[in-house]
Image 1 (cartoon, rainbow, N blue to C red):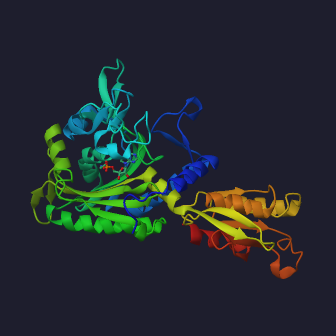
Image 2: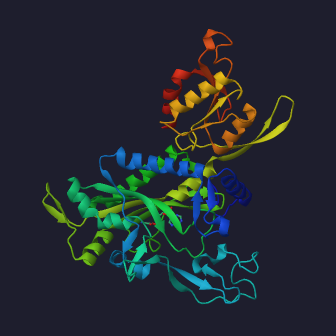
Image 3: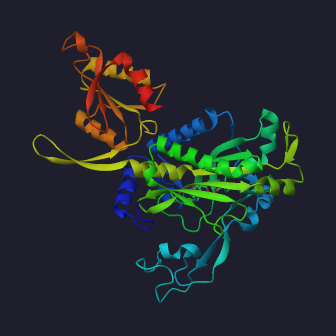
Length: 457
Ligand code: GAP
């Protein structure tokens, strides 16, 4: 098991550089110097993120009878966030340095760098002059309405619209407890020190489930959801041995939480949180019942019991999971060819269901019209089902390498055998090359779609 402090900055540097070079992630506003803590996902990053969100939605909402989806507004009423406690208390302690004018999280000084002397932490250089810690509210406020005199906030978590709409979802869908509401979407926090690439951003996406239940079931369901979420990470290619479960001790949990597990991953910059699974009791519905002055009590038809539901919340970060997927997939291996020449192969070993491109499609020779026609026809046949990439530039070996570097699990080559030049047996078959083993097999063109669907879903 890795040590909490063990890091690999060189590996992280290579990952960040690959992300930019191959179009996974760019800094927002880079052309103008960049907007700190905000990121744009390029073509491959956008596909990867979509694959993650869609798989999460499928597993969480579509394949379960007890979880419904929601797509709430990002702009959030002030009253909602006053009641939830965010306006009054969603803050981090910060300190300012009067010498270099930099601002730091007071609880993170030991992992921050002094702006003037980056080899030491803030406060460690004789020139540093740090203020006493002050609370800094992390919410981003905006003005709203025709005259701009109303206050609204960009939501700091997706959870609040779920609590506020809990009763509408319940009444409009005739569901019974226990049931959950899931939402995936943007959240915003004015983090004091965005850091570690996309890990701590000011704009990010969350994938949250609020699972409403009877008070007697809260503890058991928290453990069940933890297992469910660990299974999910395994299915997207993050192995169990790289995940750490932190059972957050008394005194470190939110005051209303009876149990919280943090699911952490071994990033190259240390072991850090991917997701929290928290038993939030009836805190959330309680504060909104009080804030809105409307009952949110549940009536159990069978037992005739009335009570305020409790909530178990698995809350995952989408951007953090994308980063974990890239970190986990990144690999470099040295290959030696028949002449003894060594070459470094960079591979993203995504599980096929997460890979941004599922298959590369190549005609062996771009000048061979028949090969191009068949390769284009295969591309057209696969496109409605999955993201594929047609490439006819350069030697096939180089095309393989380009696909390896972005994690494409399969490459399909249309060659002379496909055209029947090596006999009838191989006519209408193609070479399928596997990214990880680099082994090749031949498949009939007809069989490609079902063969791929079985492997990439
Ligand atoms: N509703 C509970 C909640 O929001 P949280 O621990 O503050 O809990 C949940 O956030 C998840 O959202 C985190 O585990 C993390 O994956 C993600 N997250 C939180 N702040 C983030 C940030 N600044 N940048 C990227 N992801 C963040």
